[in-house]
Image (cartoon, rainbow, N blue to C red; front, side, top):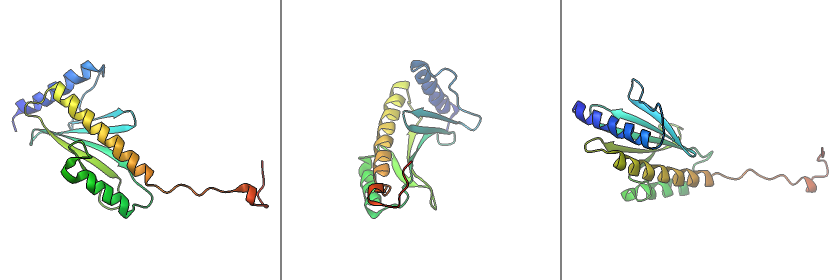
Length: 152
């Protein structure tokens, strides 16, 4: 991919960073940067060869993933309806669930980047909340019913 496309990506990020007062925002030498939007951390990774930017957001990891959770995440992936154009996946092994989206640098502007990031973060928040809600509640201890309980 041309260096023009990579420069277009960098310019879109620079303009957006200036617009939202992210002074000092820059990609590291590997073409990566991380920003937090409320409770969502988003990693931005420039893929120079493809002229794209990869957005990655960890969504959490339930203690015991259920069939219902996997079903809901697959449904969110269908047509990207519940993912803001991204794809939900899981790191190999026992890794956390992740939301990923690849953006083309061709024609990227600060406005298009802002809209894409907004949709991505909204989807990540919704999916992370769904994953967190699927975790079983901690069993409550009823101290009043336990005559051997010591109260402090």
